[in-house]
Amino acid sequence: PCSVRPPQTTTMGGAQSSGKLPPLQAVPSVNVGKLMGTWFVIGVMPTIFERGAHSAREIYTAGATAGAVDIDFTYCKNAFDGPLKSLPQKGSSWFGDKPSAWKVSPFWPIKMPYLVIDLSKAELDKDDAWFVVGYPSRAYVWIMARQPKMDDKVYEDISKRLVEVHHYPAGLPDLVRVPHQWTEAVGADGKPTYERSAK
Image (tube, rainbow, N blue to C red; front, side, top):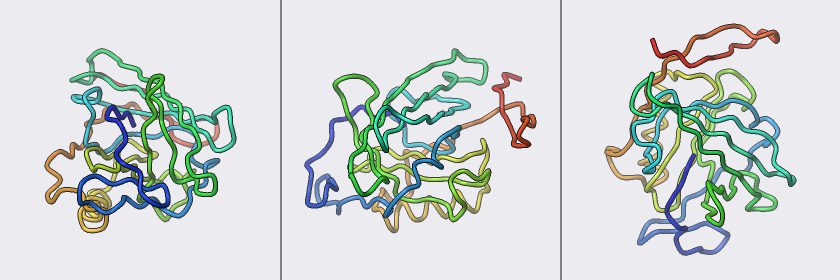
């Protein structure tokens, strides 16, 4: 995820609020080790950089400090054969005992809140895993999955919780389902691998 707005006023417990919205609540914890690897952006309320993104993908690797995550975010601009854009980011630990929230830096000195607000019952290192990143003002959201596709019912249930549980705008008018086009193969470990396809 790539954020560009400055954080809102911080409230008790490290959560942040915007206007009369209640603080956005992160999940109790995230297994950071199982978060590593490739994730696809399935749905997004996009920042200015992400508008028109096709085949958006992030690769997570361990950062320099405990609990930190570095993010390699790439996507094709406006079309499957559009120019490939890259926006590397660094994620630093935010809540020492709650690794479900970080601050992500798309560029120095900006550091933006990154809250995991929903996640699959499947362990995060499984092929059917997914999670959702929220933003305190509700201006942005990212729905992430291990595969470049998501069952419609799962996507609809996530969208419903964004409104009913996390107080995102009714109808989610700014939520975009990201188009994906990949060539799938099987890696040496037996797991699927994906290469961007312009066809």
